[in-house]
Every structure is written in C-alpha cells, then in structure tokens.
Amino acid sequence: MGLFFKIFLNNALVALLISVGGYFTGGLLAVIISFWNGVKLGLIVGEALFHLSLMYILFALIHAPLEITAFCWFGAIGLLGFQNVRRIWSEKKPTLATFPRYRDFIPPLVLLFIAAFTETSLFIFHS
Image (cartoon, rainbow, N blue to C red; front, side):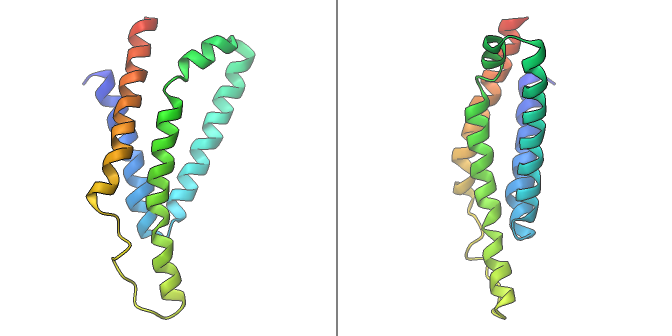
C-alpha cells in the first residue's frame, strides 16, 4: 500500500469518525477528536520548534491548512447531531432532516485528497 493511500485512508477514517460518529453522539465525538488532534498538533509543533528551523517546520506543514479546513468542515457536519439532542431534551421526536447528505462530504473529502497528495509529495521531495 502506497504512502498516499495510507495517509488518505487514515485521514478519511478520522473524518468519518468526526462527522458520522459526531452526528450520532450529538457532536460529542467531534469535539473530543478535534480537541485531541489540536493538542497533538500543538505538542508536535512545540517540540519541533526546539529541534528544527522554522522554515523546515513551515515547509513540512504546507499541507496543514487544507487538512485542518477539511477536518473543521467534517466537525461541523458532526456537530449537526446536537440539534437532535436538543429535540430530545425538548421532548420532540428526533429527525433525520439534519442528517448530512452525501454531497456534504464531497468538498472536504476533496480537500483531504489534495492535502494527502501534497503531504506525500513533500516526503518524496525531501527523500
């Protein structure tokens, strides 16, 4: 399995957890995963600042804006589930009207695809 496929598949699985898992947990899973990814990113970049030049770090993270935007988009999809939690709390029947449609997943998935391609290209360029 190629590096691109591994990176894209890993990101797609995390995106699935954030969006669909987040939806069915009322947004809780989306918040937890997003928070944890932010903590990990901060720790890694913070540690890298002690050992690597700023230019190297910026070069290595050139794919990050696309990836972060895509994960925020998937997180927004996952947070839609909170509307059903509010309906249950107000003793109304939950509805799937807020459930995301497949076309809602296409733009952030394209961003993840481009980010994975860029990240893979960085590894090939740096090797």
